[in-house]
Length: 69
Image (cartoon, rainbow, N blue to C red; front, top):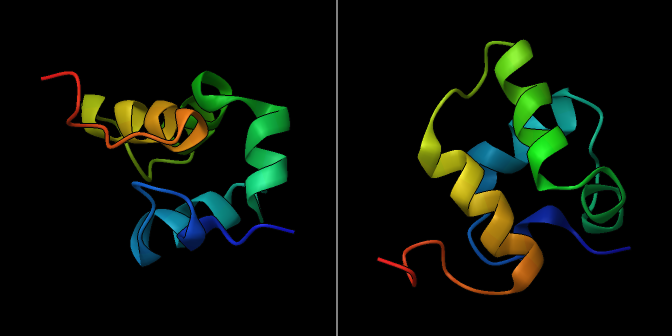
């Protein structure tokens, strides 16, 4: 099991929010996918921004979310 905080772009606050919407670890994040995870966060009123969406995409790809800027 991969801790969310061990993934690039995911710090304690985003990890807490992901756990709150039923994504406890990196494997679950991969299964759910970044777009669906971002939708869960938005629906729960926890995150609603492009930065969070890009951070999740980057976490799954293993790259910093700012790398494409």
